Image (tube, rainbow, N blue to C red):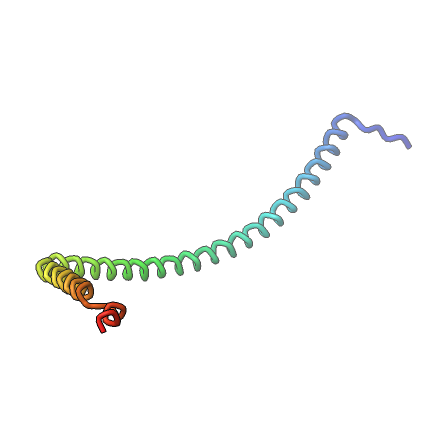
Length: 117
């Protein structure tokens, strides 16, 4: 028995094989896509957790910086308000240092005391 294959039959056979190959590739593509989406969901969940932690820490740091800024402003205001007091204390320290230096300069040393005996 001889069976002749026409061009039309050959075209449908090749088209069927091509569709079968396309279906296999689509199945593999969607399988890999599902694995990729699962991994992406895990990464997004981790990112959400990390973002939440970073937001909390940022708020904590912001509060700390605000407190430090307020403290520095208060110290600056106090120093500006007490310039005369600070100037007086500085002058008093300079006076006492000068007085000590003067007294030490005029005080006889042990060597000089031994010479005078």
